[in-house]
Image (tube, rainbow over all chains, first blue to last red):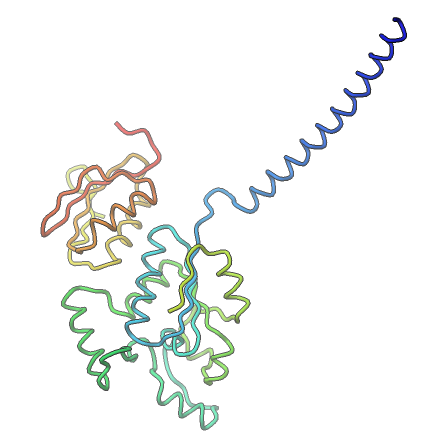
Length: 200
Length: 82
């Protein structure tokens, strides 16, 4: 009987030691997980939206910027990526110096900025946009350059696709200030963290 | 934001989507939790936009008068309200 008691005490002691050791280990792991969660999602982390702007049409750009500005006002962090025709939204001027002949030709044909873009339908050699602008003014709708200004003021991140700029011969100094430059990976890195992704 | 008779007032009349909500969000930043703001707008989408905006931030829309001019009173979230 005395041996049994001793054995039981020994077993209890060993079990206690092991369990407390495991508990300490688990506790440390839990602290680690909590710490990581806090890093991944610190309080106040905002939802994100990323918009890939491919189109350079007036109505498409207007929609893109209305959604972007609306999203910021809803507490969403917005980034917009501009590629191909969409780059027109970021242009502030057109320069010809130092460009190849085909780049110059393209610069001549393409709109010099958001104020010069055509509509996707009923463009009618520029009559469509003029009509739209008048109708928008009547309804007190913010103009496209106005919306772009608001988007910048509210901190919408604007990124220009460097590859398409290169292809089309668009230089950095032709774009508005504060634009960042990137490629497909830059867009994907942003889009994968976003709840809303749009291709316009 | 114009303060009139102890009440903060934001005039969004004549503005179109999304500008009333843009200005409203900016105006709310200057308010303390529990403070109220009266906003007037004529944008036809203002009612659904305002309600969605309120749900998103947890601000309370305490009154909403419809008409040619939509008039709403909102209370900033995050405090005990009287």
